[in-house]
Length: 92
Image: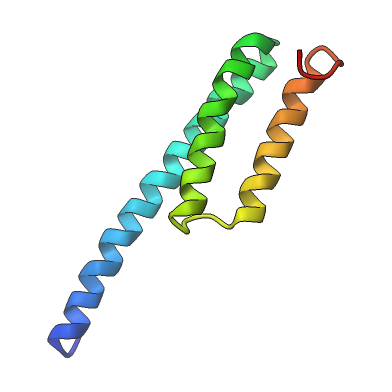
């Protein structure tokens, strides 16, 4: 239990931030799972069309400081490599 009013307010703020962070992480995980499903089904064109949505979400999370830039870049690079592996050639 917080002892002061400012401590109570800080607790409320941190709970709101926690909920937002959990929602953002859940949305990211869901979209990555959808993309991986497309990759497993070898639907390269659909995966390439879906990739910019994930890229945009990652960039927004970095901008809001909910994700570290290097982490987001690594996720984007690895997902793109998986898409390229579908047919073995580069992005067409």
